Length: 298
Image 1 (cartoon, rainbow, N blue to C red):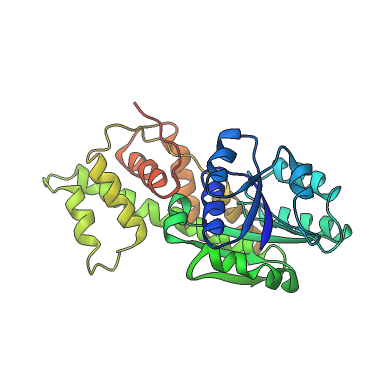
Image 2 (tube, rainbow, N blue to C red):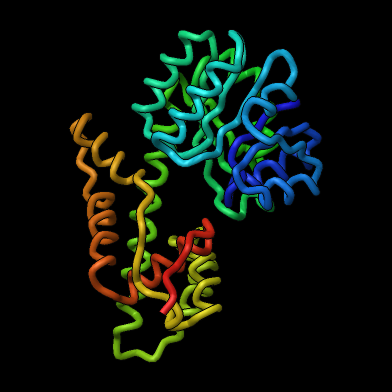
């Protein structure tokens, strides 16, 4: 399939490379010339702007967005609404708030454009391992673009979740659960680090990867981080959040669902911006390992 792809950041660029490896044709645009040059070497077709990107696509256009949530998405959709025709498809693969997605879908429908929301997980490892994709929207439009999800995802790693907004909703819940899992690992390792036992943390992470009920990919990444810096002395215990847990807590209030772990994990990240602890360093290290997120070095 020949599609347009806007946004070549940490995940977007690798997604383009994976699609190219699966014989899709990709027309790309990003404000970073260096990012476009990199994917051009893999066979992507660069564009000077969004208008040129649209001109290079076939009659029924499919455009994948991998850009920051918020006004950037709205501004891009406004530009695309002037260039696309009824029957064309836009896929938002970023971490947009599901309520914004429902609003955008309604707006795009007025132009006859199908708007698909696709929650994307896999971080900087997605090119190598494949992604986990959760997508929602008009079923016919989703079936038309199904080959994209299958080729991006690991085996059994893509799911049609339902009507518009469902993909981003499921991804939001996924990320909220991720917060809690990361927090539990970070607190556990801090307890070991503060104890009177001279136990090697890297060895603990390693043994837990074999037969333990807490074995997981996050534990694998924890092991990687500890191998690189056993005491995490090179980074600060400062942990950002990207908004998904805030949205999940808001949604919990909407549906009257108690979200104790997610809320506590989010508030702990706020705390990390005021103090420097080993648990916060561990959280920062894990985020860097799975998503390539920046860490603050001392």
